[in-house]
Length: 214
Length: 321
Image (cartoon, rainbow over all chains, first blue to last red; front, top):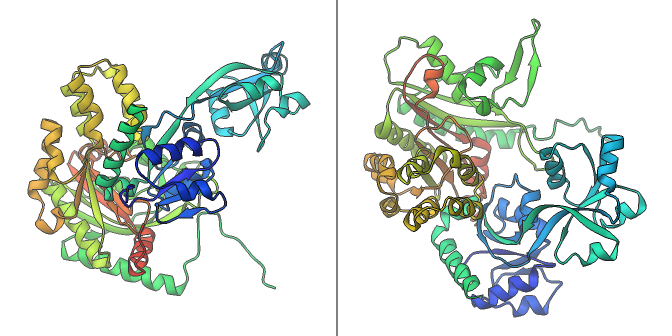
């Protein structure tokens, strides 16, 4: 019961390695999760695994008491009624505006056409960013390989998440603006946050300590 | 093959089986209201926009607007508190307080796409006008617990906080008015990581930083009030005025922030392990009636009858969160 009887939504994908490492340090048995990447529900350990972008959905509905996901996901789904409790520090990445190297095609489109087309998997973050900076942008929502959009003429630029910049570079794209720095966050369902306050606070304290120890 | 004629997303038809159960809940709650001296009122679902926004521009949040024959803007009410504030000031302009009103009525909100949210919700609630501070809040909470008991919910808890507590804490630690909006925004959006960033940016003494970060995260029994110092005096008064049956349902939540701006003091929400979202809530709004010309302290609450029904069914099934 090292999760104090709580159910934790674990993000599969880029964050899963560091998430399981953190859980190991808290004494949660993660062997079964590591050994089995098809299984989704690990009742004994109190873990459910899912896509990072689904974590706020499960936590808001109370299907999981707490969850781990990226700040990028939380910013994109900012209307979710969940508590953001702790910056877990791992999974650092930056949400950027990028275009093909050379002349800034976005700036050119805005100057000559009055509007620019931006491809992204994060339509709400992108729309908010261009609205806040007073530019007209047509947001083109795509589901993967966003880098392709400016290379094929679908859009002049992209808004996407980058950790090392390698994928952008390999596709001949350069970062023009930074929108948001992201790391993994611990979130909680608002009802569980009250009814299981002691259990959640104790777990947060242990996580905080484990992160500080590094 | 039958033809499907849809209703708008977020609305639904209620058929006899469900209607019977919802009706039983509403009747049980009405029984408590009557026994406690609350008189049921009906107000129009459509109101003039300029009247609702007088109460609170944000709270009115009129999602559905239309024009009448003369070009006036009409809106569907988004809660019952502001309409009742209007009733008190116009129909009870000289009545001797306290005044006690209750309702079982529909309210209308906008929904976000594809979230399964309701546009139309059935609310059961009360407004207690003219009884200030601790005694008024204690009465509202007592009627709340009696209503939930009568409806047949067993495992519920009431989260109790104070809308003025964090402002008092900021005052006590000398935080200038200019730096407050960002901090309050983080609290409102339940982002304690952001709160930490904003509070640390103020560069205060460590004990002030600890208080501003620690106090809003406190939830629990009466012992958590000690950590908040004089800022929690209002809640201490309420707690002292609560009967035992209500006090044992209370979880103090010093970071509780309800989304409506008209709350001035105690605020509360109802939780049940059978549902991942609050069943309802309310608070004190001592300034609201003054905006309609009758300056009286007031408190109230509303329960979402549909969510209450789901929670009761969930509890009976033995479902856990």
